[in-house]
Length: 238
Ligand SMILES: NC(=O)c1ccc[n+]([C@@H]2O[C@H](COP(=O)([O-])OP(=O)(O)OC[C@H]3O[C@@H](n4cnc5c(N)ncnc54)[C@H](OP(=O)(O)O)[C@@H]3O)[C@@H](O)[C@H]2O)c1
Image (cartoon, rainbow, N blue to C red; front, side, top):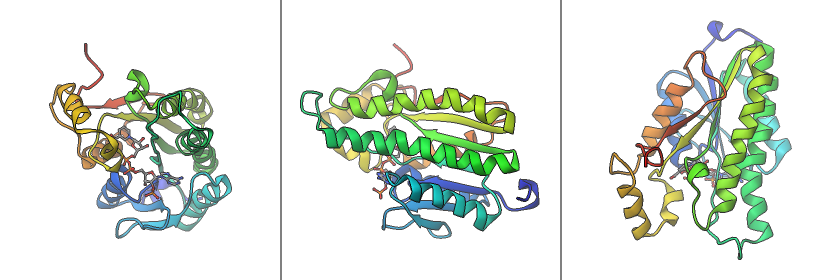
């Protein structure tokens, strides 16, 4: 496999069909990367090579990551962004909903990290970023499956950095605060007002702002195993 300096940089975004992932794929493309992104039939931004993948299908996800590395001659950045939340109190949470949230948010990340490490290990370089959520620290009433799945990513990263580091690969978490995407559409007007009030910047993030942070964090030297909050200060003060 060729060294990254000898070819165009390659980024793959898992969950590039809308919201933060869509903007992230666009950002890497605009910065001159070759970009691949996954979707489930709805497509990816122009100029991004699309792979139709449901991350609950572990073999399909592994194959897509290997295919990207083979097609582009390497894999420099992998962003695991796919995620979903189910709003339900613990006394009503169904087995099916719990399983889907864990499979998409946490197990899919395990699969993607393993497959990316395999490819990046060959070139002895790479950046892995997992999209967590600041709410994994604060909690959300009625979304324990979501916050627990995101908290699980922290444990994944803490061990993965030891396996990745000696091979020149870094792995970090980005923890956004409330961001204007379909996911936030589940939140009531009252709760939106509370989120804005709880943010020192007094606003909800645009997905482009989170994409910008993901792009910048993918090139910070000497940072691995870190969780970076991009929340407009929400959840970080008293
Ligand atoms: N919005 C927020 O306030 C916020 C805050 C903190 C963290 N986050 C995190 O940011 C990430 C992106 O969320 P978003 O706000 O951009 O939400 P979104 O617009 O709902 O996008 C979710 C993405 O995940 C993908 N996805 C869901 N289930 C999947 C599956 N089974 N297989 C493959 N892909 C799947 C979706 O693909 P489809 O289009 O095919 O469904 C979509 O690309 C998530 O990990 C989320 O937890 C969001």
